[in-house]
Length: 142
Ligand SMILES: [Zn+2]
Image 1: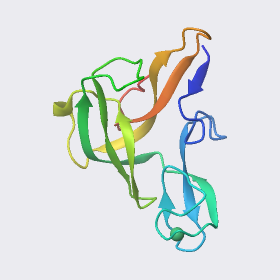
Image 2: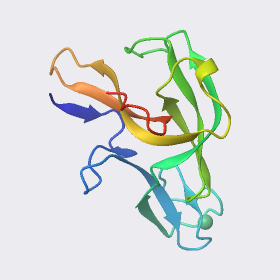
Image 3: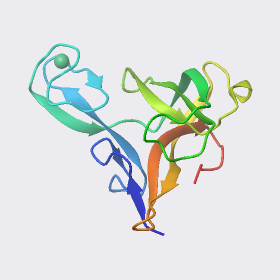
Image 4: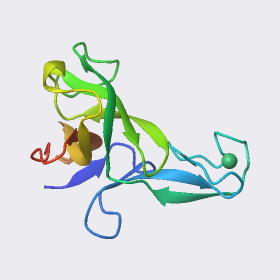
């Protein structure tokens, strides 16, 4: 079945190695990374930036369950949502969390990037997918 990234500029389904990746920005001036990607460094304002693939593993920093569908959202609720720290990149990213029950998660838990189905597009039949982080070793969300 065809899968389409909900945000193709930020989330690649195949980063060239058959695996998904988040796209961030590397600043040539301050050497810091940021997410989502931007032509201007969010730390120092420099415009000399490169796009980079961010690391696929991190630790859970904050999380909640979204129990009411946001405007325009066509996927199921509840779903997990939170912030994951990517130590290798020196940043935290806002993300879906593949586990919706907050009681099953804990601070500092190792997590890994997965593909999470948000909804199926009624016209094309394609599965619209987002990035999410799941507990390391957890079965992929899709
Ligand atoms: Zn910078």
